[in-house]
Image (cartoon, rainbow, N blue to C red; front, side):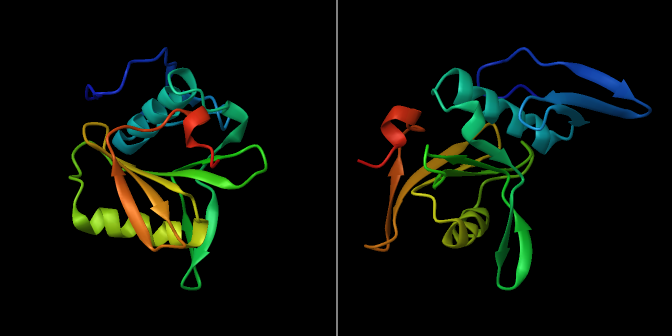
Length: 152
């Protein structure tokens, strides 16, 4: 798998037939290791190990409805009350982050309602703070640690 510009983590790989699997600490099972999954697992471990996001408040591939269609978020972090805090959209490293991918993530977030939005392909990361009331967003230079991500 490709080197990403996220810190490495102790990962557990296994082989199942022709598929390489990676242990997912949130789903507590081995999942097929696709390029997008490699990015998702790095982000999960970075949020938990480096930014203090509680493992129990992270959810992978949670379903939500948008325009009467079922969609799935790649990763969502919640606050202690169960409100969405950070919505993460992961792409494979080979997928460039474009205005169209940013629009897709922002569109999903209209349903989810997280005040923080992260878009990453493991090489490029874009994070925004969204103010739904003012209908504005502010580009952040880094992903806020959990303690700073919580609304005041």
